[in-house]
Image: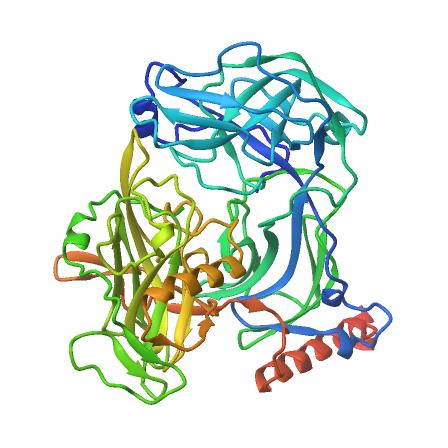
Length: 302
Length: 275
């Protein structure tokens, strides 16, 4: 999980680049969906009006003490069907794309050769097949390009806007190295050929949909997990993929051996009161959940 | 992903036998007994049928499960390898006639691996795969020592696990998140029609724990399913307070919490105010 930080893309694999050498960049751009967190289940919150004893929860090593679903920061619908103004195929790969009215898109940020706001399709309107093996057809997403963000700290919320947006430039993105599995709109996607953009014959118009119209299939949960290790106790920021905890690039919150209780800790807007740590069992109260009023760049493969 | 090591899986595949379609199991009946080398047992058995739902099969690979000892302080002997290959090699169940699998990794489908195993607690220790998508290929092997989902397999039952719960995103043969549990069950029902002697409702098994260890060695080789002494630990995977009775340890922590809270609200003692 990343928060409004520019990140230089890394060369994920020479293997695919070698396979496609001569037609794509060796260094792909990364496209991060923009996400927000949904409100915390009230049942996990301590009732401020209740007696202290009734609000204390306990956790043993491995227990998740706080979890919230994430969602895309918006969903946009294509208001007009558009077509490319030319052939979109590559030398090694035949490609077509069907950009029909009604196709839904989610906001994302292209990072790499440029930092730009983009809208990427939830569905996979692109169809491709290797010229050497036409039967091995695959499908893929496309993204429409919007304004360049001059600094990583640009106000993404403001840039998203709420009115009708339009763009005439799109590009293809890939979910993974040579794969065409269906994947959710919560993970980083790759733009293997950042130098290749395509135009449509008329500007594509996008309208923001009401909240709740986004595709939330496979929406992961972000969470804080209490874990006791040989080094001590800590709260690990994680997310849940399937039913398994996955690490995120954030440091754990260490509960020191000489920690004085009660103590309040804050993480990403969540406030937790630590009341005791006795024989590996943490007594605590969740006072508030993760912030829900800000956006972040997601890379949560689920 | 903590570490991916490229490795060939051909050796794995070559050692596997095709999953027999005459597997006999009656979850509601008595033991039928295996007489001909097939997987055959009943509801009173100490064994379990392990079914693992996986995604596109690529050209081959394997999932490895290692049992934990009784007190869950280390691995036990008896690792289970579920191998598979594109053309039906290994432990992959035969797909329905009209839903034949393809060599291409592009196919977003559900496949099922099957094996009879002793019931118990198993960690999904490693996964390997070999892929080909029409113009490129690759192999990988991944040991989950940093956190392996761990499952309690119920004796005498058809235990249905999802690779989504067993291995992390990035494993090529992992089941896509787009497949719901209902999809998995529906496809399993169609697939098992090739296995008329496999009877009884499947039990969906989720990981309830996570094993962590430092990879140990056997002889001169490092082995994923062997923990270096003193490094093995198991943590739960659950939402705190979710449908669990408080025990003495919880009560002790709450008592300590109340004492700490009371101490924090006490006014400073007279002694401490004196110069």
